[in-house]
Amino acid sequence: MIEIDRNILRAARQSGKSKMFGELINYEIRKRLTVTEREKFDFFIIKAELYYERGCCCERCNTPLNLHGFELAHRIGQGAISLYGKKIIHHKLNLKIVCQSKDCNDFFNIGNKPGQVKALVAEIKEVIEGE
Ligand SMILES: [Zn+2]
Image (cartoon, rainbow, N blue to C red; front, top):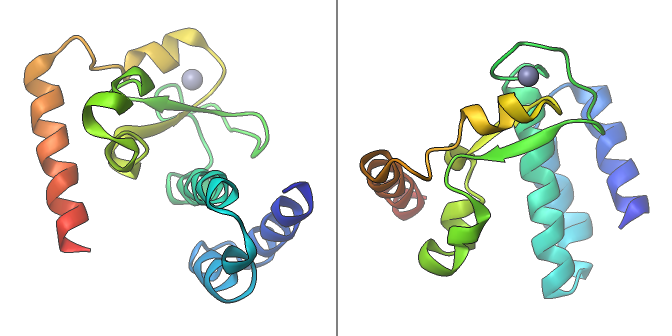
């Protein structure tokens, strides 16, 4: 996995775009992975894509982030995977890129706001169905 990660990161740095990731995954790397590796890999790609799409800075405090040193905040926490499934919990719409401050991570947590959770889950389902 480490070797793959390096290749992807190099490609990301060179292109500055995330489109290229998809091609690499589909045609070169992804099909060679086991199901578990593929899951980890897909999540890594989402993380790298988000990093670039959202401007490489903490979405709360705007601190510039290092690609290896930032966190993903789940708006609906990972504890809810059993309830909603990985597709929803690890969906981009449920994720924020944040610095390592606990305040920034906690800021996006909507786990205790049932109305917002319901709305977000519905929104993600709609996006998934449209894909
Ligand atoms: Zn922050």
